[in-house]
Length: 306
Ligand code: CP
Image (cartoon, rainbow, N blue to C red):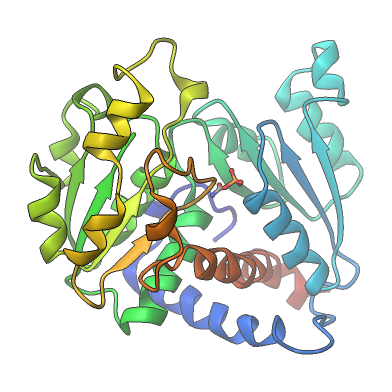
């Protein structure tokens, strides 16, 4: 693995191996001294051209826990504001002899595009509406941790599937483990031909949640809509939001997941987000260990050579 651009570059066995490695890194995060020298001397640049709390912080904390030096650049304050192209920016960053670039960008395909110009590894931290592979891996780690397996699960993904890179990466990943994946959302937020990804569209939310192992709620991505795709937030919440009474319908071991940030009261009611079924903060905790693993694996070849 030279870069991490898409979940589809990973086999089922590789995904399980990455998750296993992430559990050993997770132990480091619970120690009094949360630092190991594994990536000492390595320089990692995180380029975030879109807003982020979890992913950006998670990659930075992960790199620091492995003793790498990290620097972040965002669009604001960088020469992208003066018209520099993305390729020029990352080639200049590479010229400063950095070892790994993590990129989040509003354009689908941006991570793949820059990887063709760079010798150092690239991690896709979310490219437009395309993919968010590290999120799907940390989600899988969380499901594995709570359920003991990723095989043959019944998954329901609810909300703005059209604009969700998280949904796409999760579908690619979970299909490798024979999951039965159903999606639900406003018709305008379901991509045409979504069934081609091997998922089915459901119409009865309350009936379907009674029989699933995982409910993934997605954020409504207002910033990616050029027009409103549903009549009002109140209606969205009424018909597509996970409300408090639904907690009584789900199976005892059903996991409620959300990649964050949550629009509280829109796709997810406060009580459901804070309920014992919710693993939302476990996802965030596992994100650090997963990103430590990904950076370690991508840099391990040149660790051996150095
Ligand atoms: N899950 C996720 O990508 O969150 P951020 O946008 O805060 O990074």
